[in-house]
Each structure stands twice: as C-alpha cells, then as structure tokens.
Length: 376
Image (tube, rainbow, N blue to C red):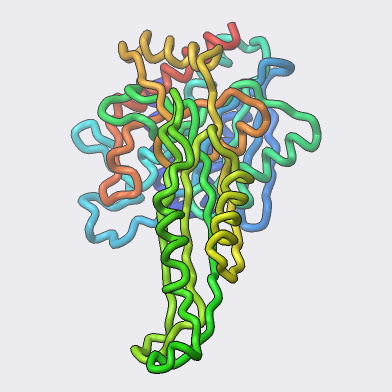
C-alpha cells in the first residue's frame, strides 16, 4: 500500500487543480477504481466535475468523500519547492493539496484497493463521492451530487470525509460534527444630507448603534457537550460617500454566525428581525445559509474509526466539532453518519503545504481498518 499511496498523491499534486478546475485528477482516480470493478458515474454541473463510484451492492453504503480542487498557491517564489512539483524531502511530501486533501484521497483509494482485492465479494457497498468544488463556491459539487442521489432514492449510511482534521499528531482529532454557518447582509436605511443640517437628514449609523450593541452582545445559547456556544462576528461594515460633510443614506452590515445544534437558522432569522423591529429601523436583509450544523454521536462509524486509530497509530482521538464548514454538512442531510479524519492541518492553505509520508501510509491503513470494521 505504501508505494501506491505516495505515487498517487504525487500524481494528483502535480495537476494544478485550482478550484473548480479538476485538471484530470478525478480521471486518474476513476481509472484506478475501474480496475477494481467500481461502477463509475460522472456528474458534471456547470464548471464542476463530480465523480460517484460504487463497488458492491446493498447496505451498508460506506462512502469516502473528498475534493480534488485546491486553493491558489499564491506567489510561487515564496515556496521552498514548487507547489505543483510534489517533491519529497526528508520524508516530507511538499505541494499544494498535500494535506488538503489530495493526500487523503490517495490514502482512500489505496485503502479501497487493498480491501476489495482481499474481499472481492464483500458485504454492502463501498462508494466514492469526489468533487472539484469545495474550496470555492461549493454550489455545484457535493451538494448537487447529494441532491441527485436523494432524488433517486440512493442512500449513504457511513461517510468518511478526508479533510485534514489532525492537530499535533496524526489522528489526535476526529471531527464528528460541524457548526452551522449563516451570513446576514443587512442594509439599514437613512436619509442622506449635509452634516451641517442634521435635522434634514437621518443618519443610519447613529440609529443602528443600539441595535448593533444588542446584536453583538446577545447570548444565543450556552453550547452543549459537543458544541461551543453560538458565536456572531461582524465581518464588514460600510456607509458614506467618502466625503466628510455628507451624512450617509444607508449603512451596510455583514455578519456571520457559527451556530450549534441548540438553535436553528429560522430562530436566528426571527430573533434578528425582532431586534430590528424593536429598535425601529428601516431595513432590508438577505440571508445566506452556508450549511446547517450536524453531529454524529458515538456509534458504529465513530467506533470503527476510533478502533482503527488505536490499532494502527496507537492513539485515542478527541472528538471535536470546531473549525469551519466542510462538505460533510451536505452528506449529513442524507441521514448518514459522517466523520472527518485526515492529515495535520498546520500547513493547509499556506506556503510550503506539506505532509509526512509516514502519515499518509498510516492514514491509508486506518481507512482500510475502518472498512473491515464496518463491512466484515
């Protein structure tokens, strides 16, 4: 397995698949899976390529999920080694996507190869859901595949997402849930005028201050055993024409909430609306729901992954729901148990992104053990 993982990871990294351009990465993976007997289905939506592949039949359906797209490398002169060369130095693999998440994809494919070769007539179904639209808009990738599968009655029971979850050592953290994310784009109306004649104008900044104070101080919940309390942050705010003698006619405030399972997006919207009404503000607001929170409690999938880490790496992971969002939020809508396990996240989206070769080899073994635990 060792050679297969590293060779495939390098092959994928050498393809500059800046989101949403796949650059042939999924074709490379599909060819490997086809040789194992996987049935390949392509699901392109607009400029995004998606792959849905299956081996076996019936329940349980155990899916590996990931993305081939990467963020731009930035100024390549800042990299010690070219970002798409996939160079190995002192047993460290360097390159954009090494940790996020082409290394995980290579480990997943190698794990499936080893398991299927040893168990060609295995119980249940092994599946791959791979997209090239995770790092950017995330509008035509996993979410569209999930919608398609649900519309035709297909199901996923257990899903491993290969996002880089580890903090200090491989496997020390397994994500068994994620917070929801919702953004409010709020426009508060006023009346533009001359600063010397405030009685002829209405300053929306002044009128909004009590509301903004209440909004930012409001305690949504206290969190729970799995999630920290819901948090709100103002991300952008602007008003005025740039002149020092014009009272602005409108105030724009953009704020984001990372929320736990103690509240819902509808509750958030209603609470903000009540605050705005209470303060007598004229406004319009547009909401963008990036994803609802999800949680996979201790059960078959978590047990299978924890057992794999204890057996292969000798570590008992911490279950955690922190960090940003991932495509796991879409797959969870299918009623699937979803966890995330991948390499160290210390260098993701940074110059000199890298991953220890030994970690990818161990990761492949953990993924394979997970299949054994769930299907044997």
